[in-house]
Structures are given as C-alpha cells and as structure tokens.
Length: 256
Image (cartoon, rainbow, N blue to C red; front, side, top):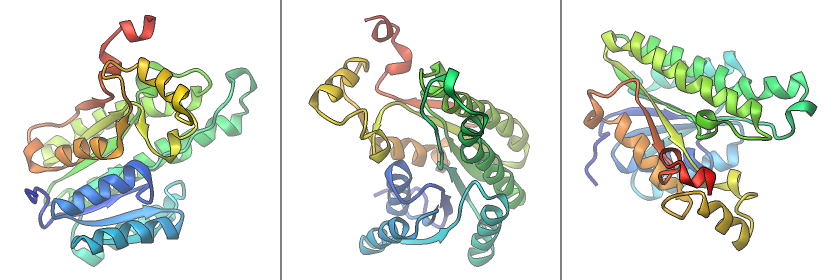
C-alpha cells in the first residue's frame, strides 16, 4: 500500500457496516488511525478487530449521529485523545420508503435528521477543529439526490441537500485549507441494498440500468473516498464525484 493517509486521524460515521466499514478499512490500510462511529457496538467492534488484525490502527465510539450533543461530544473526544482531526467522513444516513401521498411529516423529517442534520453537525465540528492545520471532509450523497427516486422522495431530497451543503462548506473552508467534497454512490452492494438485489432476476434488472452492467462494490466506493481525503486531491474541493458505473452520465439507460 502507498500509505497515503499515514499519520492522519480520521473519523468515519456509519462505520459498522457497508460503505462505512469498507471506507474505514481502506483508510487504515493507507496508514490512517480510524475511529468508526455508529449506534450499534457489535458491528463497530468487528470492524475495528478486523483492522487491528491486518496491522492497522482503529478504535470505535458508540454515537448516534442524529443526537447533536452526543455526536459532537464524541468528535471532540477523538480530537482530544489524538490531538487533532485530519479527516471527517460523514457517511451515516437514514431513510424511509413509501408513497409521497402516504408519507407522514414524521417520516419526512426522519430522512433529514441523520442524513442532513448529522452531516451538518459533523462538518461544522470538523471545520472548527481543522481551522488551524487544515483537513479534509468527505460527505456521502447518493444518486437518488441527483435524479430523485420514486417511493424515496424524502431520502432523495435529503441527499440533494447534502450535495449542495457540501459545496457551500467547500467555499467557506477553502481559505482555511479545509477541503470538502462529496462522493455520490450509485447502486453499491451492501446490506442496505440487499432487498433490491435479492435474487438473480432483481440483480439482472438493476444491472441493466447501469452502463457497466453490474452493481458496485463497497471497496470501489471506499477508494474514491480515500482519494478525496488524501493529499493527492489537494487542489480538489467542492467536487461531487459519482461512483455509479456510468449511471448518471448515460441517458439511454433511463429510456431503455
């Protein structure tokens, strides 16, 4: 490995499973000390154990990203323990599923509490901690926030908000050498997408909509996050990078 993140302290929210776990693992492989955040202790412990077994450095904190006080306190605790914070990855998200006409206001707000509010709290606190030495923030959006997805109107709106919020944060952070970028996943194989990829037919139908004719792997998404977090992306801020097998760039897959 190139150790692109050597001596860096990184936080990854939603780090117990899926994209978050893959990102934490790749960052540790690249030399970072990674602290994974999540609501459930057992998955976090497993991710940390796997990283340590591979010779990396990692720890975890049980913290609910939708709880401002607890989340911010956990970030502060990491910065105090390690003396700094270099990388913040706001990956945690929550969503509801259902028809817009049947959606309650509580269901609508549920899409925003973790996905948007949590990203705001994480970005704000990271920028406060990074003001002296600079740093990199990578926020996770979704292809749903680019196009909108039926039955997921709240999630689509929340992820669109993450993208444009991150661009504004990038503009404010640039003078402080704080970069803020967005990764926009397409269909990535995780526990969260297991329902839509539940059998060969479902997988084939989903793959037909993707120019590369397959769904993505969590490690492929993690590689993009690592790049944007690293000094290799030192002149990149305010970018929104799709990692979707070409789904967002090819109209024919929409009309086929």
